[in-house]
Each structure stands twice: as C-alpha cells, then as structure tokens.
Amino acid sequence: MAGKSVLVTGGTSGIGKATAAGLAALGARVGITGRDPARTEAAAAGIRATPGSPAVDGFAADMSAQAGVRRLAAQVLDTYPRLDVLVNNAGGFWAHRHVTADGLEHTFALNHLAPFLLTSLLLDRLAASAPARIITVSSGAHARGRIDFDDLQGKRDYSGQRAYSQSKLANVMFTYELSRRLDGAGVTATVLHPGVIRTSFGAEDQAAYLAVMIRVARLFMKTPAQGAGTSIYLASSPEVEGITGRYFVNRKPRTSSKASYDTAAAARLWQVSTDLAGMTATA
Ligand SMILES: NC(=O)c1ccc[n+]([C@@H]2O[C@H](COP(=O)([O-])OP(=O)(O)OC[C@H]3O[C@@H](n4cnc5c(N)ncnc54)[C@H](OP(=O)(O)O)[C@@H]3O)[C@@H](O)[C@H]2O)c1
Image 1 (tube, rainbow, N blue to C red):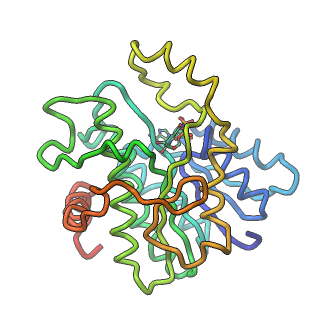
Image 2 (cartoon, helix red, strand yellow):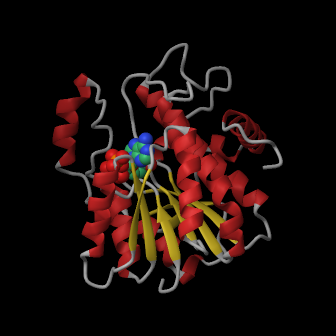
C-alpha cells in the first residue's frame, strides 16, 4: 500500500481503528475520522506510534449531519491529492429514535446517507486516482432488513433493530447500484459483514433488556483486529483487483439477501438519497 492514500471513516475505535492500523502498517497514508477532535487526534497519534505507520491524519467531523460530511469531504480533498481507497465504516445502533441536525432519523442518516454523500463528494478524486476502491461495512443484519419507502425515517413505529437492518441493507444496495454506475470507471465498490466483534457498537443507546445478554455475548465475540480482516483484504489485496458489486464475509464473496438484488428498489433508494442529501440528480 506504499504510495496509496486511504480514508477510513469511524477510525477512532473498534473495527475502523483496527482497519486503519492494518492499512497504515502496510505502508498506506491513512486518514481516520471521528466526532471529537481530541479523541480523533489521540487515535491517529496512537496508530502513528506503531513502528512502520508514520502517516496518519485525523479528521474530526460529525457525519450524522450533512454539513459535517461536506466539511469532511472538503478537508480530505485539500489534504489528499490522490485517494486510492475509501472505507465507509462509521456506523452504529440506537435503541431509541434520535433526530439529526437535518431532521432525519439518526441510524438512516449516519449508516446510509453519510456514506452515500461522502462517496459522491469524493468520487471524482477516486476516479482520478483509478484503480481505486470503495469499501462499505454493512452487516449480516442486512438480511433481516427491508427498505420501508413509506417510512424511511421510522416516524410511525421506530425499532432500533429495524432501523439498523434497513440501514445495513441500504449499504448493500448502495454498493451494488454504485458498482453499476461506476462500470468502466476503474473504481470498484464492495461491501462486507465484519463478523460479530467486541467493540463499542451500540453502547451509546443500548436497550436495557439487552444489556446483560450483550455483556455475556461479548465474551464470545471476535477482536477488532479480526473484524478488520475483510476490510483490509478488500482495501489492499491484489486478489480482488477489479472485483466489484460483491458482498464479502471472512474475505470470501457471498450471496447477500434476496432483497439486496432488487435493482428497481436500489435505483429508487439512490434517487431518494440524492434528494435527502440535497444533491441534484446529475451530481
Ligand atoms: N461490532 C460488530 O459486531 C459489527 C457487526 C456488523 C457490522 N458492524 C459495523 O461495523 C462498523 C464499525 O462498528 P464498530 O463495531 O467498530 O463500532 P464502534 O466501536 O462503536 O465504532 C464506531 C466508529 O464510528 C464513529 N462514529 C460514530 N458516530 C459517528 C458520527 N456521528 N460521525 C462520525 N463518526 C462517528 C466512532 O467515532 P467517535 O465515537 O470517536 O465519534 C467510531 O470510530 C459499523 O458500520 C457497524 O454497523 C459491526
């Protein structure tokens, strides 16, 4: 990865931090993002301190707000004259419904709209750096998901599980639609399930009835380094050069849910996301 620039969103902890550390150790210049400037810089400094990983930049941005994503994209474009890999990793689970600065449901805004908007804003730079790769961290939970076009924002009847599964299905459909739109551009789009990993996932707003179960389940979960394996593989391995529009688990291509292959729904989701992110259809 020497000579390559990589951006990993949500790189201050968990799977994202392990992904950033792994790619930095392979020689890439790596940018990580997080909400809090001090925490983001501390995480970047921590990775920089690892021998052989000198070039790590921290970008602070609240990606649940579209203004935050736009500021982040502008900073990244200013910092990296070329961008070889974008890893859309930041995401989370909220047991209760929260509303973002843009008036959108938080899970949908952070897990789906933020990577949608960030990818769009960085796409020209990625294309100019081709061959380039866009990797999005979804989840096996996408298989329980359904895109509820009548209530995308969970206004009628919010459930954390439903909102999360919908957002992770949106990650898979976004990747497949993106790969179709990028045909011939030299930029690949892949999506993955990282495994069940011991991180801070869901800790900000956990359902009380799940807390004990999760504490026990954590004992059996894999480490963040194990969870980063597929992201690092897709970002760096020559084995997946040119592979696009595929879903991976444990570094292997897998079939995703039936709903994820619905091309009409994917095109509709793309249009709705374009409108909600305040972008014109051509942008
Ligand atoms: N853990 C699992 O078992 C599992 C399973 C399947 C899929 N995943 C997926 O893996 C990805 C990473 O999750 P994780 O388990 O590593 O969780 P995590 O430890 O909670 O890490 C989440 C990362 O996202 C960042 N983040 C959260 N809200 C943000 C916001 N509004 N703006 C910008 N950054 C934000 C956090 O940074 P700050 O807190 O510093 O802002 C942190 O770096 C997620 O997309 C998740 O859906 C995880």
